[in-house]
Amino acid sequence: MVYTLLCLVSVVAVLPQAPSPFQVGATVKTTSGQSQGHPSAWLPNVSEYLGIPYAQPPVSSLRFSAPKPYNSTSTFTAAKFSPNCPANVASPRNATITCLTVNVWSKPQTGEKKKAVMVWIYGGGFNTGNSLSPAYNGARLAEDEDVVLVSLNYRINIFGFHGARFLPDLNPGLLDQRLAVEWVRDNIAQSSGDPSRIILFGQSARSASPGAANCSSTWYAASRALNCGGEEVGGKTVECVRGKSWRDVLAAVKSVGGTNPMGAFGPKADGKTVFADYAARRAAGNFIRAPILVGATDDEGGLSVITGRGGASAPKGPPPSVSSSSPPGVVPPPAAKAPPASLWSVVINSMGPAKAGGAGIGRRQTAVPKAPDLSGIGCGPHSAALGRVKNGVPAWRYVYNGVWPNRDIESEGAWHGADIGLQFGTTEFLSKKPDTDEEKKMVKTIMRAWSAFAKDPKEGLKKLGWPIYDENKPTVISLGGRNHASVEFVDRKAYDDNCPA
Ligand SMILES: *[C@@H]1O[C@H](CO)[C@@H](O)[C@H](O)[C@H]1NC(C)=O
Ligand SMILES: *[C@@H]1O[C@H](CO)[C@@H](O)[C@H](O)[C@H]1NC(C)=O
Ligand SMILES: *[C@@H]1O[C@H](CO)[C@@H](O)[C@H](O)[C@H]1NC(C)=O
Ligand SMILES: *[C@@H]1O[C@H](CO)[C@@H](O)[C@H](O)[C@H]1NC(C)=O
Image: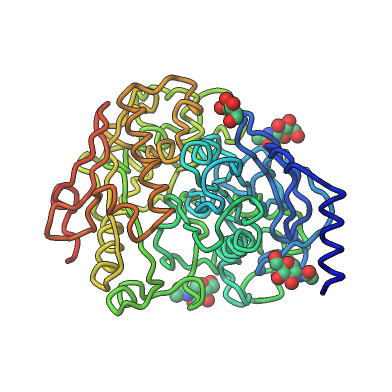
C-alpha cells in the first residue's frame, strides 16, 4: 500500500502536466479500430467521423444473412462517407456491397460531458436511400444542440430484404440497423455520447407497412434471370446467387422489376424483426414502452410533383449522392417545371414507398396520374401515437406544414421529406439559398424540440409546452405554414380522414 502511494507521488512529481487542449477530430478508440476524425468542413468546431465500418462486408455466405460485427485494432482514417448500399431504384453511381458503416458528429469540447445521442435511419422505401445525403449532415445538430449525431447505412433492396423464405433471416437490412445501434451503444462514449440516452429517428421507410407482397416470387424471378433456377430448386438458388457479382444480381432484379420498383422488396413478417399483427400488439400494449414523437407532412403526396415527372426532365447533374433518374414506370405530368437542382437530392433521398389507394393524410393531395401518392401513410401517425397513450406511454404527434422559398418544389404544401432539412438544420447548406427569417425560427424550433426529446424523452417536449397526444383534444402539433414559423395545437379532424379511434 505504502509502496503504491509513493510510486504515485513520484509519478506526479515527475510529470506536472496540464491537460492537452482538445483537438477537433481527435482519434477515438472504437471496436472498429482507432478512428481518425477531422473538423467538419461545414462547421469546423465539430468533430466528424465518416464511414466507420460496424459490420463485416456482407459477402459470400454473409450475403442475404444477418450481419457479423466488424472488429479491428488498427488505425482507420474516417475521412469519407462510404459508398451507398446497392439499390435498383435511382441506382447510385457510387455503390458497393461494402457499405455497412456509421458516421458520427460530436462537439466534446463544450456542453454536457455525456451527451444524448440521435441515430438517423434513412428512408427510401427499403429499396433506395443512403446516409451521405447533405440533408442528413449531423454537424449542425452537434454544434447548436449539444447532442451527438450518428447516421447509419443498412442493406436495401434484394440484399437487405430478399424475401426468400428458406433463409434464416428474412430482413437482414433491419438486423444491420440493430447491429449499428449496438455499435453506438458500445462505442459512443468515446465521442462524448451517453450510451444510456440513445434515440432513433428516421423518415418514410420506417412507416411502411410490411408483409403485403409475396417476395419469394420476386426472389425466384431474379434467381431465374441469373440462371440459378427458380422455385423448383428452392434453397439451392441462394448458393448460386451468392456466386454472382452484386452488379449482376441488381441487373437481374431490374430485368424482372415490373412497374413498381419501390415495392419490389421490403420487410416481411418473421416474428422476430417484423410482426404480422401490429394493431393487436398496440391494443395489448405489447411493444417497447418508450416515448415517441411521430408525424407526417401535410402534403405527403406533393412529392409526386417531382417523382411523377420522370427521368427525362430531372435536373441535369444532380448532387453527387443521388442518381439522375426517377423510378421507371412513372408517367410524367404535362407541363411540369423542373425543380431546382439543389432540391433534387433531398427529394430523391426521402422518396417513399409507392402505394396506391387508401386515405391520404393531407388535405391537398396533388393529383398526378400513376405517380407514387404516398397515401399509405394515412392513419399511421394517429394509430402509433394513440396506441402508446392508451397504454400510458407518452406520445406526441405533429403535422409539418412548412413551405419556404428555398424548399419549394411547387407542390401544394409540405411534401414527403420536406421536414428533414429542418430537423438537421441543413436547409441552407442543401439549397445554397438563404433561409427566410421565419424559416430560421422554424429550423430552431424543430431542432430544439427534436433534441429536447433526445435529451429527455419523457419530459423534454412537456417542458416546451407540447401536449401529449389526446385524440379528443386539439393536441396535433402543427408546425409552420407558408413562410411562417407558427406552432399550434390543432384538432386531428383537420387531418385525419376516418382514422379509427
Ligand atoms: C470554434 O471554437 C473556438 C473556441 O471556442 C472559437 O473561438 C471559434 O470562434 C469557434 N469557431 C467557429 C467557426 O465557430
Ligand atoms: C467484436 O466486437 C463486438 C462488439 O462490437 C464484441 O461483442 C465481440 O466480442 C467482438 N468479437 C471479437 C472476435 O473480438
Ligand atoms: C409466394 O410465392 C411463393 C413462390 O412463388 C409461392 O410458393 C407461395 O405460395 C406464395 N405465397 C402466397 C401467400 O401467395
Ligand atoms: C464517386 O466515385 C468517384 C470516383 O471514385 C469519386 O470521385 C466521387 O467523389 C464519388 N462520389 C461520392 C458521392 O462518393
